[in-house]
Amino acid sequence: MKTPSPIVIAIDGHAATGKSTQAKKLADHYQWIYIDTGAMYRAVAWVALQRGWIQGDVLDASTLIHHLNDIRLEFKHSSTHATSLWLNGRELQDEIRSMEVSQWVSRIAKIPEVRSYLVAQQQALGAHQDVIMDGRDIGTVVFPKATLKFYFTARPEIRAQRRLEELQVQQPDISFEEVLANVKQRDHLDSTREHAPLKQSEDAVLIDVSEHSIAEIFTQLCGHIDKALN
Ligand code: DC
Image (cartoon, rainbow, N blue to C red; front, top):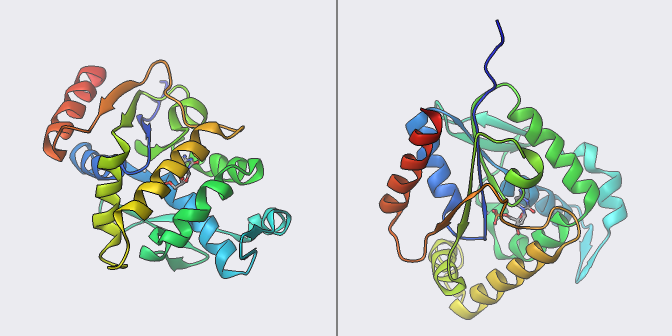
């Protein structure tokens, strides 16, 4: 008897549209494993900062590429379906969400060797278990045959306000203008890069979160999922 393929739900879209909030809620509801692929790119950026491969405004990309295999990432269960990201045997927390990492991560994510290193791991994670994965290229590159694809968007000002509220916990003096500039810069870098740029897959369902609450979006997503799975 043929084993049914695992379910793969892809959520792509702009930064700070609530992809991970919804993905976690859906993972919990449908008992899938949640994989935050942005955290993997952030972890690589964090390592580059820690090891001194970034000095001032300069990234030593060839040293980073040379040491990629030393960056061992693992998702471990933190509860039944929630996962946390571990780097070389150490659990990563909010350090990968700092402004410094956010400022570098798009430059790290455009390096083809970094992408192929992480994409291979993401494909392996979704090969034998039901997953919900969020990122920028899940429906276009990582799992072009995903069971269902969503593409999230919202106005930049709304996204910057969301990120500001998250960041202010760690950095109380951060300004709205600074966060808005970072959101716009990342949109630009993510959608204009040569390899796997952020774009809506033709078969993805567009979700504009600008005017809706978390609960409303969740209901909308469940409606699409229940229809696709039944
Ligand atoms: O989702 P996030 O903001 O944590 O993602 C961090 C960065 O990583 C984002 O600027 C783009 C990049 N990224 C990517 O290129 N491909 C993915 N699948 C996920 C994230």
